[in-house]
Image (cartoon, rainbow, N blue to C red; front, side, top):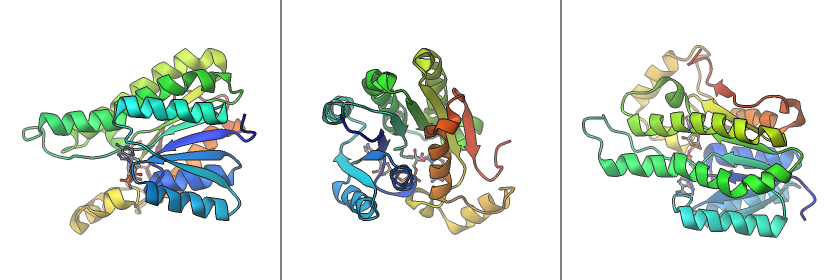
Length: 245
Ligand code: NAI
């Protein structure tokens, strides 16, 4: 069995996920970083390992439930333990509700919500065996407050909150906690593509008057993964500069 606590982080190739990989490795965990793009994952892991941390890449399309469940089994077989599971991977396919195609709805629900269900179901037995089992799901303020043009995304992110609260209740008897982080507007590739005008409007509505950094979400993940958060479960923490309060 791997000696270090083992964390799985989906969407670990860039943005918030890569920041979470770096932070958990810095905090002494062995991190399995999952995403579709192996090359980018290898870059992140090489950087972590060069800095004295411990991380390994695993390429998988988490939207493919069978492939993702098989990959999780492979991680379990290799390490004999899973202590921290971070469901971070997510996509957007924005459109107004009147124009939104079934396919855009299904794809977002499948990638953002069903993949988290599959990973929790597959990893639950090993997490329950850990003395410090933690599940952390990355939602969004859109899942808490809704957002025009994001009915599919907001539904997937609100779904993660219901999923997390149910899992928190089910796994609590084994000491496993399950919490949600709802980021506001964080500077990553996902948000870089938005028009500058929209970004300025968003910024003026953030009480702290700036966008968040990926490392600030990773810090909240590190807290939930730490012994300091052992008595917190079923909670939603908005890390959003005050957007939703
Ligand atoms: P990003 O687009 O920069 O990175 C997404 C990651 O998910 C990538 O590593 C990508 O490879 C992975 N991914 C997507 N679909 C996948 C699939 N089918 N299989 C495997 N991996 C897949 O996104 P960002 O900004 O880092 O966001 C991370 C999470 O935080 C997402 O769930 C997003 O919804 C959430 N979030 C982001 C906010 C922001 O302002 N950037 C705000 C609120 C929530």
